[in-house]
Length: 447
Ligand code: GLU
Image 1 (tube, rainbow, N blue to C red):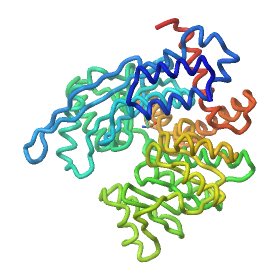
Image 2 (cartoon, helix red, strand yellow):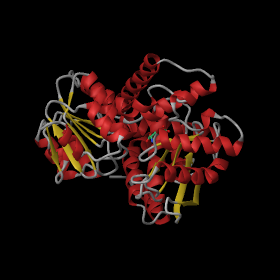
Image 3 (cartoon, rainbow, N blue to C red):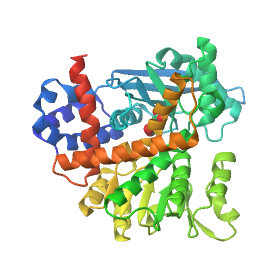
Image 4 (cartoon, protein in one colour):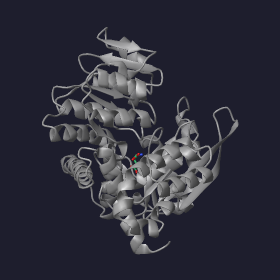
């Protein structure tokens, strides 16, 4: 529910951005939390803060032509949405996946503004990507695509302007090709222009692990606030990319039992706990399918091609795959099986109906912009190391990450309390993330 003033702003968002359902969904969710802020701070609406926040500062769309291994010319579309720079240079990942379009990039960029604000670090919000799908492409094809992508993007980015990183389909291999081309085009070794770099050339320890670690830590914090924790609980994780793999690792370290992993072909259940090394071998090294896990686990795991990973009874669910992967039916099943906490490792993985069910049931629900902020927070730590030409140890960097996740958790909880909605992490995350950006925008005047 949103009030009349917000409703007319939202109607305007719908009118100006037709055919972008994910973007509408992300905006609506934030608006639903902002009603309480409007009531206490009319100065924000007087300054047009919400209207301005809905319009990206700059949107770049470009052609990405490249030649495949058969000598055929391929054309993809590249995007970078520089959404909001009130708190720092635009910061956010690049997604390479065939589903990528402007609406998806705008939803991700919009979420990123509030997420980055919540980290407490000086980073604005942005996002980008392409409808290029690296799956099934050779290293040479991926390299040529990345080089062509950067040949356009380089003029728009910089350590004080816009700092891309990875997201779905963009890992260390892609960041390497992108950085190599940026360096060649500019003739400058500007480590701070991209994050998620390799450890030998300006990357940060813990960056690879950070999003998944953070989502597991956030689940633990939410449960601790209720007197328990991850320890001893069965946990379902969806996905098998970077976020899922390291969420599984951190769940184990916290004493939980991660029993699932998935990809677009289905999911595996392993009652003994997912064998992380095997999963990494299949997914990170061989870039294979999840079904191979069952074959190579010698009868101890079960592969399910149809159905939903959320059918598996667990105490904690960590959706770490993609947007809208957990719908109302899945939420009902999880609640029926007694789930106590859901911590979103992916961006907007639960549909609005699923979120409503979790909130009504009063379980601990950590929305992505809080629960998965560990990745971008550690990117900001990578930027700090690049700026000071220093490298930190794994232990120190992980400690910083843990502190940041704890502080995000406290901020969400305290803000929810302040607005008379105790335990509502959605409201807490949206309001706390919004207020910082809004105050900076107020200070800058109408720009
Ligand atoms: N793509 C990640 C996210 O959704 C990380 C972005 C970054 O490190 O800049 O937050």
